Structures are given as structure tokens and as C-alpha cells.
Image (cartoon, rainbow, N blue to C red; front, top):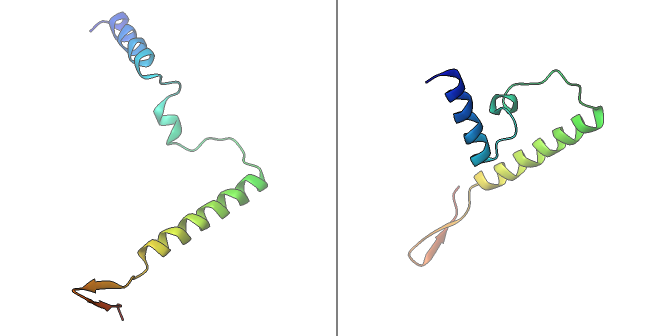
Length: 72
């Protein structure tokens, strides 16, 4: 595949899929600075997400037949 064919294929892919930025840019940390307020909001969001996950992992009562048993 020549360079021009490659560029045409990439351009066609971008047009077809609506890609607007490099996918690796979403994975790698940037060198930008984040305001303290935004850092705190991110910490709160992470803590809330962890709390939701831990609630989902919490043991719940389950049933066998007609009797209900709770884990001990």
C-alpha cells in the first residue's frame, strides 16, 4: 500500500466512523494542569463509584426453595 493509499484509507475510516481525535490521546496522561476544584470533584466521583461498587458486592440474602437464608 502506497503512502497516498494509506492516507486515503485513514481519511475514509475517519469519515465513516466519526473519529475526531487520536485514541491514544485518551489513554496517556496529558501535561495539562487540573484545577484543585476539579481534582476534588474527581476524588468525590471516584469515592462515590467505589461506594456503589462495594454495595453491589455486599452479601445479599438468597433463597433455596421456600426458606430464605442470609449469609453469615
